[in-house]
Length: 126
Image 1: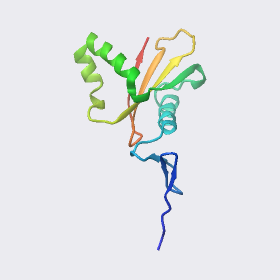
Image 2 (image 1 turned 135 degrees about the vertical axis):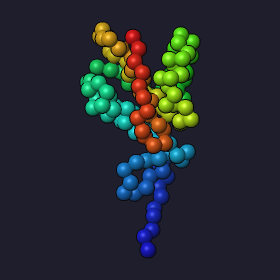
Image 3 (image 1 turned 180 degrees about the horizontal axis):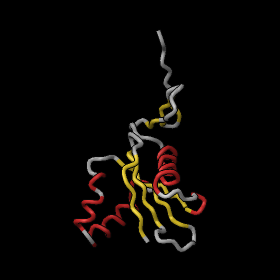
Image 4 (image 1 turned 90 degrees about the horizontal axis):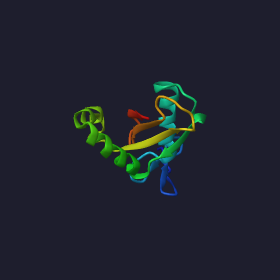
């Protein structure tokens, strides 16, 4: 008979031998979400150097909510279409801001499903 050992460390559940930590509420940790977003940007979307960006974990997606209200007001049909993928999803936003250089897009928002770790979408702004 195999026994499972469950460790509780600071509100995080750790299953020995399991690569992912899962919070008691069933979501990935802040560190894991940032890692997923970083990997997507470095290898998937833009292949850029993370050293050129400041990375922000948008607690409770508050900053995104403010920005989203602005963009939704400017172009409601486009906004609804662009972010339909977020409907009924428990997502976390990670924000990347370019460090003092002029580029076409200097802020990038990356959306990650908090439970599955799936990359959902991204949004860039100047």
